[in-house]
Image (tube, rainbow over all chains, first blue to last red; front, side):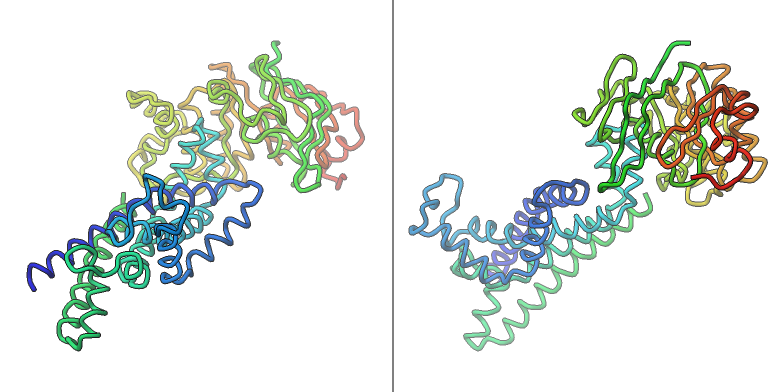
Length: 218
Length: 243
């Protein structure tokens, strides 16, 4: 079980960390764009993001399942992963975390005094430099956005179960393993896995908190 | 005197409301132009347009043969960097005074800037506070740091929005002296927005009155105060309610 547990933990971390990385890579710029600019259809985009923030993971799982299944006309696209692979789980988690990261980043950017951007522009900043200046002021909120994104995916079970299939040695992660062990009546193992999951969440959130504090003092 | 800015049929409209409507105005190179007027007259909007921070709704601003119109969302960076605006409520970055003053230079990719920064700090009398964190500064010190942050860039045009509002007489005197020095010694063109007509009289070569977004009168400062052509100017100078 020890080797298996190590594998499960590593896969959980790999899937969630990769998903968080890509959702932050897209979500932070999207949040900045929404927070700083006006464009036609912005309200609709914001409503969609808010909806995405509360979207049931199992529905995301269902959508990704259909997207990757043989019935989908898009399944032949070369960059789409196959079903029941860690990559499929990563894709589902990116979709889950993206609205959380983008939405909270947007709110953090909107909370920065709008005069700051103008004042930085008045000192000769390019648009990108001005956006970066706003982002620096909003950094605590951006870290909170990343924390929210991480929280949304590390504890998520519906989507990864659906597109990953909980295959032993391939797609089994901590949350799906907890469900399996509970169903089999191995409550102690399930509880131990739950504690491991809590421990991971605690350590990562503590690291992000320390980072937030250091940035605050910088 | 060479014309630096020429404003032609300029209108700025926010959500259907015209906040600025200036038919014509020229700003000469090397002059101090004071823009006076009551609150909400469009003075700050004029400064934002002169700093090319927002395009005009209608009309154009010609600066060094470059036109700035509603069709041009952004002036070339090199031109924009010749103009610096100090806001009425300057926002400083939460770091040292020195780092704040160096900020604009860093945006320009200039690394070896310590001499210029020290010089700018001396100009505003903040050299002893260079390492103090900006969040601990008083209103006057914030304003002086913001001025140092602007003048360190050695702009061709310095736009000042109420630079001495709510400051004590010591800080007012210090900033007024600096404005005169920048103009006399460096030939800097300065557009000064102020409520304080006495300050306009003390500092400006020419003074303009903005009322309800419209330019009522612009004249040499002596004539503006002693022999204004418009009755509204006379009333404003005498402290009467004008609209």
